Image 1: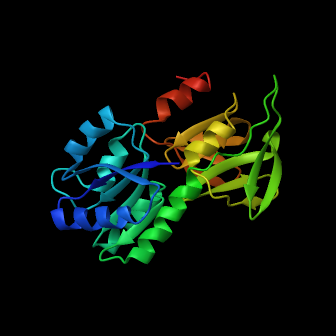
Image 2: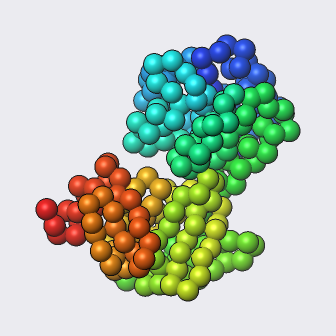
Amino acid sequence: MKIRCLIVDDEPIARQIVEKYCSYVPELEVVGSCGDALETKQVLQKEKIDLLFLDINMPVLDGVSFVKSLRYAPLVIFTTAYKDFAHDAFDLAAVDYLLKPFALERFIVAVDKVRHALKPGPVRQESETASFFLIKSDGKIHKLLLNDFQYAEAKGNHVKIVMQDFELWPTITLTAFTELVTGSNIVRVHRSFIINKDKIRLIEGNRVFIGMLEIPIGANYRAAFISGLGLR
């Protein structure tokens, strides 16, 4: 399987280093390289891109803000000389975060995470009233009842799945997991959270409470969420 990637960095030497590293990994197909976010957006509109190697500290629009602006973002490996951005990067469910200067070995570790994330996802059980789903975690395949599902939260290249009595941390993107459990009661309320509407205890302002847990409602999701509840 070819992984079509785009290298984004305002420093030509940095782009050359990533492109050289990509040449050592047969699955990586470098579609192009860009010097800023605006140029990158034009490429994304024309090309199918599976993976962005994305610098954070760039002129005009930084890498974190750029990813937030995308409705459908490819997988992202952030590359930066500033470790202070790590928290923001993983809030966006980045596959990995490479701190410059990074060695080839560390680059390959990051690419391995991409390979794993792009593997075919778990199989959803299809029926008129799907009541459960299957997901692999820690080398085991778990059968999870939708009625017991509370919420899920993006955690780097994992998803924290909170059930009625336990938690799982499979390696899967939140987007892929959302597709797996899509149903009338499952809604996305934030870029990092999906919830089971049946488990809502309280909604207050831009917060929804599942039990005692407070979950933020993202500005981009609020209107659809409130409308889906039959509220205005």
